[in-house]
Image 1 (cartoon, rainbow over the protein chains, first blue to last red):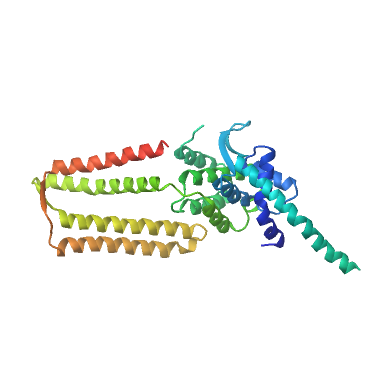
Image 2: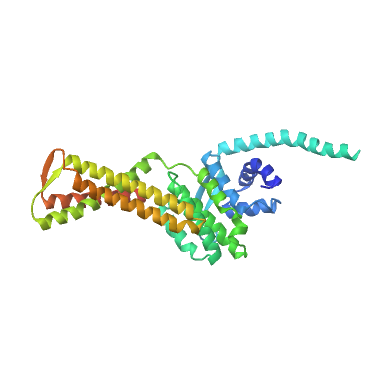
Length: 113
Length: 222
């Protein structure tokens, strides 16, 4: 596993929740969105275990319904519990990302000294 | 809108025909592997399989291969999906096992009824030895079914093991038959006895199969 996918693993659930919060999506659409945001090298298949886990925790629910183009699709939306947890993940990420950016960036400026 | 599990499987079968041969092989292996999971919700399993198939079909339109979409390690992905699937409620699992048991006993009893008809006499049934036979038959078949599931799972991504697995399957099956024949000849019937006419035996068998059929219908309509 590459360094990037290892780093991503813990936070991918949060990213998936955040995308679903904006609008209801189905599997393929979700993977396209993740790629559009620049997460290009995660395998599209990895979203399915994530979606299953999030459903099991009751953070999202999937509903089957016909799509605009015809066939049935499973659309995902956030539950109240999912929203709460997304907020929690956002806060935690902020708490981590600021110091980590400083630490990692700081080393660089020290090196440049 | 409520779709039954049966309809999900049917849709999957139809849509799989639209895959290119390479994608069909990749997806087919993944599907077989995920389906052989034990005790996971059948509905959730079929839903995620259909979602992944839809995903693959859309990607295929853009000229992508299954390996590009789902990665080079289908077995790891399949394992992760199985782990993330919700458990089947115990009630459903027990219902399924009960249905299988009714079917098995029904199909074992009907030939016996026919046999008794041609002999044209009342059958004396020794409850003790009949029960023993029943238990051995059920346990033996349960072992075989378990083995078949394991075999299918192991072979999903590796066809080299096929011959060895069939040999083991044949051996277990053969041993089961030999054991039953052996017991039939060498163990004297024991236990309390009841008399039954061919008509009763045959009727009982039909009743069990009908009951299993009704069970199945009610399970599938959920």
